[in-house]
Image (cartoon, rainbow, N blue to C red; front, side, top):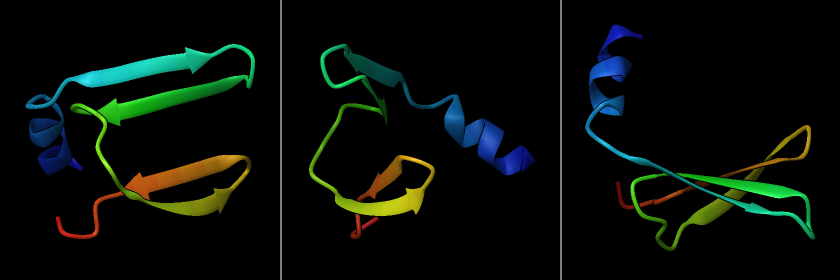
Amino acid sequence: MSGLGAWWKLETIVWEYDKEADVLYLSIGEPRPAVGLDIGEGLILRYNERN
């Protein structure tokens, strides 16, 4: 996991909380179009298939 730490520092974490829907959105870098994958426990992982 040490390699992940170096990559993590290069990006900015962007977050937005939707109080009405009780949803927290987190993005590494600015949000962009992505594919969604339901990973359970109420979590949706979105990722760019091209990268």
